Image (tube, rainbow, N blue to C red; front, side):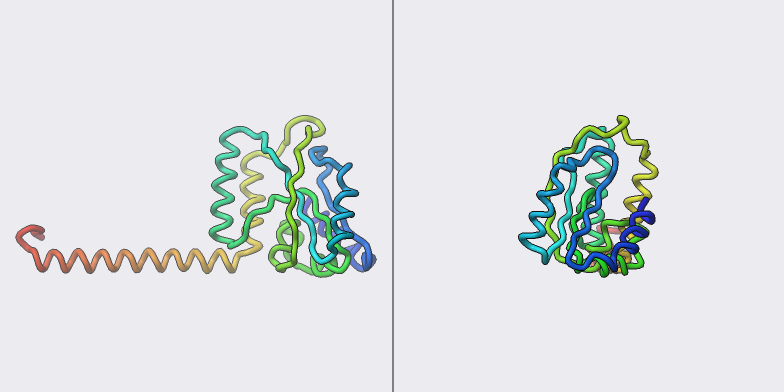
Length: 191
């Protein structure tokens, strides 16, 4: 579905000067009667796109726990606040930049963050899903999350390298300190 949305945006991009692009999931959980409100917000400030996220997760405790862990890991590795966006309202002048991102097909809502485009994030109450529960299992959710993290792969790799270097430095310091203590106090710490 990410690639399909990216394809649609790329087809529309040349035609949206002076207009807005609104994207949303078709699962029934978003209140589409609020779309005019988003258009009004864009009319008031066309310099920022709008991310709308669903407020009030209703998943099981285990899912919420892992999702919370993912949010922390994402923040630490990507250096960005995670915005689980389900609706985007994009001013027409931004659409070509979003459409031009080669990462758009991987994860639709993260490339605007990667591009550093100005945005505003607002919550929306979650509604009842069409057809009941989601068919997406934990494995697919993990894959989706990891793909989202790859959008910021340079940040993630740099931070992981910094963490590894810090661990090596701490290990070296502790090792040297232990060696010094053993040399200076051989009776207390026999080898």
